[in-house]
Length: 340
Image (cartoon, rainbow, N blue to C red):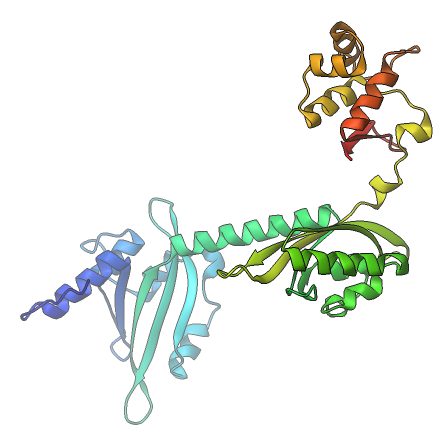
């Protein structure tokens, strides 16, 4: 929608419209006379009453956040060289609220090149700045999360060639460029390369998710197990535009012994968690294992291993494992489990 102001008051009405709708203000500075002029929008940005304050550079600087004030002599250098003004800074209003301001201006010179006047405009960009800060915070949190998980995030072309990567280079101890394209295959264990590549071909042909566990040579020089998963991003016609994937270092969990390896009995916490994964009730488990519901409730009451031999644990373990759960017993910490 375009508004057109007519008549002698058109310029003034236009400026007023810009200031009110755009949270902006105009300023000018007669350098020779050392005289400043602020529009009502400047006073509104600073939270000042125009009837109580005479505009001046010193007054304006007094409201700039101490950390954002120009160093001594900088403004004189800008004026003498007729440099453009373009900066973002914080102001502190009398009520204590902080606002982010974008300042843009020009130094006007006479025929001899001598600075005579400065003009500019201020915009309140607090909302925009806060959105950027929120995005930066989200990105920082994302980066920390990926590193904490010992994972890499990547995108790939439709043929499986890596087009971008975050944290792959750090995990492998190499520059990111070396894993781009099909360079990632060089870091896989020789026994896993063909299967990994074939999985890509199958996923690309069927447009189904890519999922594989394979070994890659990590930064410590040894091969680590990684679980790599990717989903296709499709064009409007159904063709694959790219893949978005993640590779997580699962070496520690792969090296954890299972119950069969260490002969450890299940804990009540493991049984409860396994039922949750399988969405089984106590009665469902009791019927499948051939034990009474009261036995299962008694076993689940404690998160510790049973003190003595418990005959019901073996049939419970068998039906839960058959249902798709794998029980883990790490060398340190509490026993766990995962979907098979």
